[in-house]
Structures are given as structure tokens and as C-alpha cells.
Amino acid sequence: MTRLRLAFMGTPDFAAVGLRALIDAGHDIACVYSQPPRPAGRGHQVQRSPVHTLAEDQGILVRTPKSLRNAEAQAEFAALGLDCAVVAAYGLILPQAILDAPRLGCLNIHASLLPRWRGAAPIHRAILAGDSETGVTIMRMDAGLDTGPMLLKGTVPITERTTASELHDALAGLGAELIVPALAGVADGSLTATPQPEDGVTYAAKLTREDGRLDWTRPAAETERQVRALNPWPGVWFDLGTERIKVLGAELVANAAGASPGTLLDDKLTVACAEGAVRLTRVQRPGKAPVDGAAFLRGFQLPVGTSLTAP
Image (cartoon, rainbow, N blue to C red; front, top):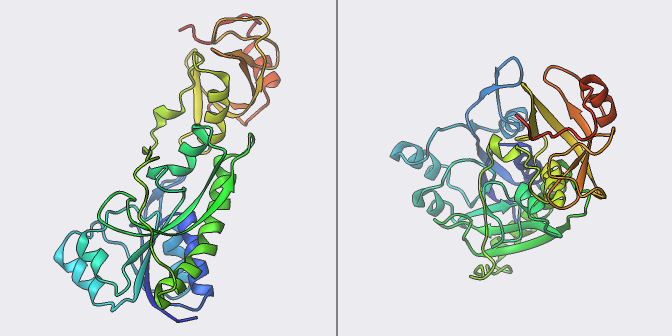
């Protein structure tokens, strides 16, 4: 294997798995770029990103610029004398001067089967859409949003029980497996990039808290996927009186009674939807521990037939 001089650009746990693979493969990591430390957790303590933490623990130089669009940041990057840069969930747009600086360009570890799910939230959107599979694409970056030519792909199935956390971990591991041979193939010329097809392009829009609001008028299958896709972030919830109730688990059941959407169907917290129903298997009141649906109802004492859509 050719030992390459690299920069790694990434921020969350997903990216840290890729960085670890490059370190273990023996590449020369000249510098790591990551988002600046920010307040996080209940105490809002300023914390380094997972990539930042791993790099410092390995004695690797870390830079956390707020932008790469200024001449000084671009000159610092060019001065590293890189063979290649590897990017994974970094969080900053790379201007053309950055893309052009490494001898072999910049490679991206993207968590989808491009051109499907370009953009910020490909893992969550794949589950929400009911996709049967997704994967990782290693691509050569260009100025567009995940539009660059593809080098390697690997697939991961999405089952009816796959959660966002499980899929995240599977794709992070797959990305780490693919980036090492992708770099080797680019370095020795044995790997040729293939342009993305024009058909099949979809965009994985960034998630907001409002994406987690349950809407009982949607089909039950969509609601159940929402619970699997959006935990832990941004979380799934519905309002009951003055309380916002988090939904941490759900399963599909039949709406045998043909009840209106939002109707409580039994003492196990089964709620009618537009098509079918969902049983909320794990829920959490503000400031309380998570409980199963039956225990939740004992605390609220809601009779069967109650409408959860009522103000």
C-alpha cells in the first residue's frame, strides 16, 4: 500500500470511524479539520467533536476554522502539501481552492447510494422513505452538492426494524472499509471515477425539530418509520394537553375498529392513523423516565376512545 499524506475533514462519530481506519492503515495524517468545539449536553459544557477528540488523542494537528472561504485558511491548507483529502460529514462547504489543493483531489465518504439522497440527512431520509437498502458511496468531490463522480459503493439492507442508530453504525463501518481501498485505487490509477447518473436524484434535506411531530392523519407505516428514523435526533413527539410526549418506540397494528385518526384504541397506547394504527411501545413524559404504553396510560388515565388530536 502506498502511504499517502492526507488531511481528514469531519466532525461526528460517523466520521471518526473513517479517521480511525486511515490511521490504522498507516497513512500520514498531516492535519484534521473539524467543526469548532461547541456547548453540548445537559450542562452545555463546551465539547470537542468526536473527530477532534480522536485526532488530538493520536497527536494529530487539528484545525477548527469557521470558514474555508478566506485566503488565509486556503493558504494554510495548500501549505500542507497533501496527496489527498478525505471528507466525511464535515459541515463546511469546500471552495474550489480547497478542492484543487491536494494532488489527488478530495474524496468524500457519503452515507447513501448516490445519486439518491444527496445532502445533509441521507440516513434518516432513507428510512423515512421506506427504502429497502442504502449504502456508502466514495466519490471524488466537485463544487456541487454531492454531485461528484463515484469511485466505490457498498450496500446495506434496511429492514422493517432498522433504526437510524443501527443504520448509522453500519454505514460508518462500511465507509471505513471502503475508503482505504478507494485511496489505494486512486493513488495507483487502478480506480476510475464514474459520473453519477442523471436519473434517480433525490435530496436529503436537513432535519428540524418539527420533522419529529407525529401526524395521526398520515398512514401508520409512515408514522412507525418516523419513530425509527428520527430517534435520537430530532426526536419524535406529540402534544397531550400541556405536555410534549416523546415517542421512543412504536409498532404497527391493525385499526380493526376503523376509528378516526388520533383515537386511542386500547389500554396499550394504540392510536389510530389514516391507514392502520401504531402501538406506542415506549414513551417519555417531560422530566420522567421512559415507560411502556400501558404504564403511561395508567399515569394519564385516558379512556379508550379519547382523541389525541383534541386541543
